[in-house]
Length: 159
Image (cartoon, rainbow, N blue to C red; front, side, top):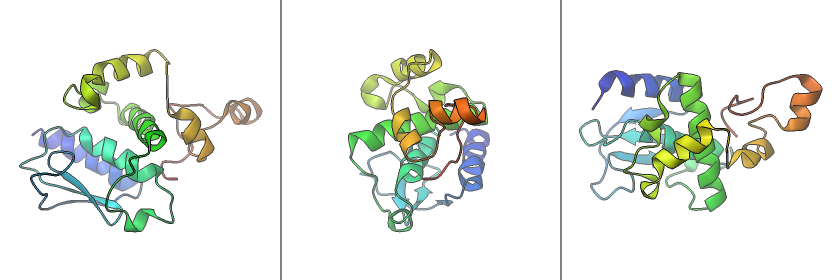
């Protein structure tokens, strides 16, 4: 595991208000070496297969309703929230300045990580309307009237 990269990702995630700690993770966890607990992330440094998965899980936590987030123990299976978490992850990796392949690897995303990364890099986004609806990214109207930047810039990182 790339400890420098992992530390960098954890630093970003913690800076936006999501707790991250090392700890035990069951072998059958959905994401290898990761689990959500009380609205934060627990990771097993010895079993974390892809450090970029930290950002994806953080995206799920970030797009969760703030009233539910502190009790969150599993991420939503809602397809809309999955798309919002993917879009959030792209915005986060851009803010951090890392290669999209670190998050959108081929072991996840049903083998389509590189396609997602390529589409986002070419401005073909999905999930962004939900980030706008959640008040996390500026809408076209907001950008036009106030001059704020649109996605992949974020207005706030937590819903």
